[in-house]
Length: 424
Image (cartoon, rainbow, N blue to C red; front, top):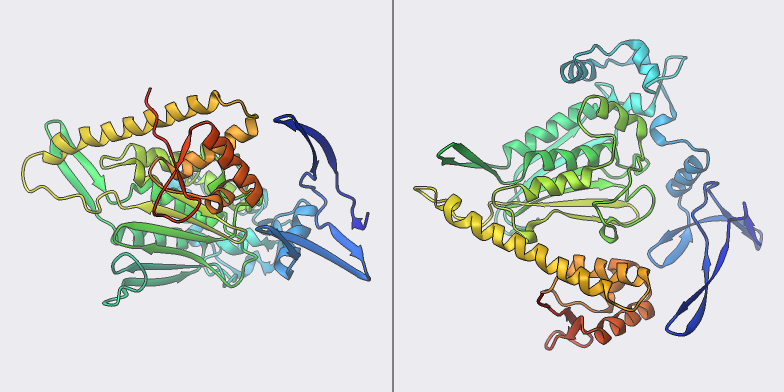
């Protein structure tokens, strides 16, 4: 084998529909980078989509860090503790924990070493951070996209400095560029923010903490449109998976920058248990104007992560008198939510009755959760959602058609289907 080090290889026999298949599995290894050695070359590769390409310099650095069980934020920087101040970090730490941040804590928390040299985490938290690509771009766009043709941006800010400063600047920008409605009730009032505040903060905090700081040509972005807010962070999922293909209620916590994550956890900006996705969605579910189609969307690729948070008040009329929204709209919203959950339960029951292997059932459920009953789809969408080949996508379509779960959609081109809505 022309690989160094030699990876683990697992061969399995898999039987389905009376046919035997040999499955070759190569589990993710911990001794990265793995090099191909042959033809006078020594090359490491990374996976991008359906291709394996030679690792770029930044990719190689990530692989080396992973293979040595190190993270970017734990590496020793060229900056000494005495060269920088940490006024903002100390102030916020005191405010949110009730304790002073002592110099000894910098060593205990991994922000500097015994020689007084800052780690990258420490450098990122300094008041005037010397890591210049740690920046935040915020824009309130006019309309629904970035090219309205009238006025492009209503507000535009660029920030740099300590991660604590970036967090506070981002919070202020979101508050200044979103609105909060409220409605009187007999017992008080109902708050109706455009975007649930805790969900927005959770997404933004995670964008700063879990970004890939080896990506030197990019920065965290907050883009606010009339109908939504998008938060972009450099770096995909740390384990290389695509978040849109995962059950976000069950995603384990894997932290790209554990030292930074730890200090923000100590300041109660985030939890240690990795429940961020569930918290974001639950804040939306509990919101007054929530509808199923407004559920937050998460998307990632090899080098980027996006969150879309929908404006719950977009196209919701403001009543001038009485409690019309509370009395009339809320029951309708609750009924739609209940219908959505009922349909999902029926679909799960149908899947459980299929005579196919468990991995196939899981793929079909993922497709349904991403598509729903109304949206047409074909092979291309299936390939993207469950990361399979065109042939495997075709086989999934055959099985769903045979089970009466999907039907052809006319007028949308060849090979388009939608799920069949079944009753109890």
